[in-house]
Image (cartoon, rainbow, N blue to C red; front, side):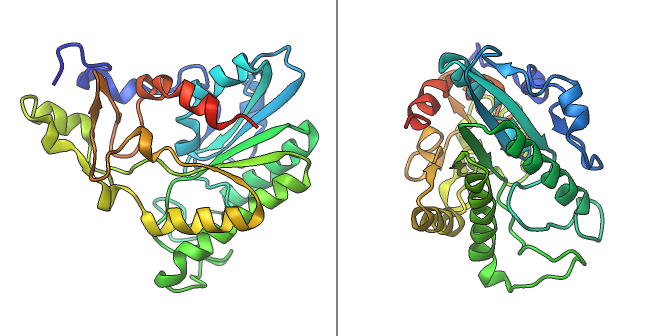
Amino acid sequence: MPQNLTPPVTAATNDRPQGSKGCLASLDETSIKPALAEGCDKHGDPQGKTTMVLFGDSHTEQWFDAVDAVAKRNHQKLVVLTKSGCTPADAYTIKVNARRAFTECATWREEAFAKIKELKPALVLMSTRTYGDPPVDKAGAVTVGKAEADKAWSQALIRSAKRVQQLGARPVIMQDTPDPRGASVPDCVAAHPAAVQQCALKVATAIYATRKTANEDAAKEAGFTVVDPTPWFCTDTVCPVIIGNALVYRDGSHVTTSYIKLLTPLLQAELKG
């Protein structure tokens, strides 16, 4: 573990986007209005002639600092429409700690689409955490088998991207970041300071290869841009949890803002065009 590890393991939990406070709606929130009241439509370059929207769940919101920097460099306004546990894909999940469909997400998502229609943005960057279970219907019933989950989710994501396109914006799909699968990375590094390689994620489990491929194939067929951040995190076999002196994960799922900031030039290059 580097002596100048950033963030330190003791501060990792709080190494999250600070500029977008109030922009990640809670699980129970059904409206985008509280976020707009917090100024979540006033990021990037407020004087920009065009607008970019960051749309999705917490795996989308974790990119805020890089996206905000790109928007400023491109002289674009940035509007942040994100909600905890709420995929932008046109499908239902089971609500966390509940036994029913996440209807609050669907209601919130419709408001987000209405706002996108109003904004007429140039670009909408969408991302979502990878859900292992198949999507469900409004009644909470699973409609496809486990084997069809990847295709069902990619089709749901493309449906939302097509809707964004119909509203006049260019949709860009960001593939999910490598997943520690709930294992707290800061805790592991703290427990193995002299052998942090023990905490490295294996590509075989951290990357949902079949979902990534399904997303790429569906997006290619629809003519949409896909950004795959995997090379920014992993070699062919492992995804280190420390790169340089940066701690990559703040918990068992999300990337630290310290590391996200370092990826800004790479994201800038991907969002051109």
